[in-house]
Image 1 (tube, rainbow, N blue to C red):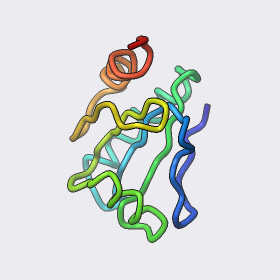
Image 2 (cartoon, rainbow, N blue to C red; image 1 turned 135 degrees about the horizontal axis):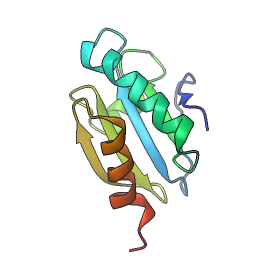
Image 3 (cartoon, rainbow, N blue to C red; image 1 turned 60 degrees about the horizontal axis):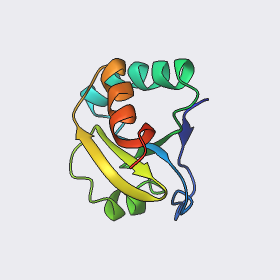
Image 4 (cartoon, rainbow, N blue to C red; image 1 turned 90 degrees about the vertical axis):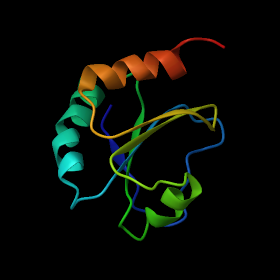
Length: 108
């Protein structure tokens, strides 16, 4: 499943949505380095829904504020519309998959 970039101001994931929101900034070196990792996860794990949000884009600023994003890159794991975990900083693709399994794939 391709990564969906948030480009509409005021967008929020649906209330029952489960997936990962990847907060980034196009001028952030760690974010640029992490993009191939995000793309690899999206390509090789279609069960993982990923939204990408540029924290400096006008459409991304409100959702970044909602989730109180203070650093990029940041991953927020959302289950049934509720944030259940996060990871700040660049991480390899396998770590993203592990975090998905930890936060979202296992029943609670």
